[in-house]
Image (cartoon, rainbow, N blue to C red; front, side, top):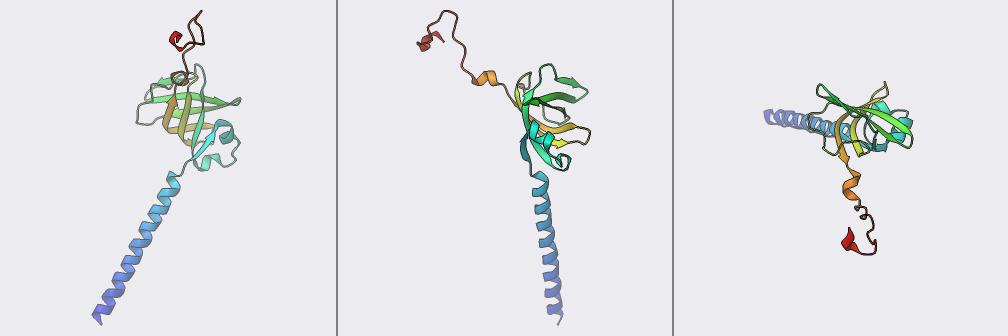
Length: 144
């Protein structure tokens, strides 16, 4: 009789552990789920402050300010602007500069600001062909 009671206790304990692991996995996935949106889409979202987002836009000219371990800048896109505050532990990319395309990952606040935990940036000039030299013949590639 004692073995039947032990088996029941073991089965109940195993079920509780399995249910706990399932709940932890589900809640972890829900927390880490991030939606990719543009500045315009984020500002138009009625429930924006309730989820994580990856928001993309262009860094506004002259908007980058660094002070006391915090960096703030403005993302703009399609005439809409979003103030971004970054207080993450990772250093910001060297390519985060005026007019760079950037993606900030974090949460939109009810005060209209975006608190980013990570920021990625790309300098568009690194991916464009160099302009031809003055007076050069554009038909030949040797002039570039």
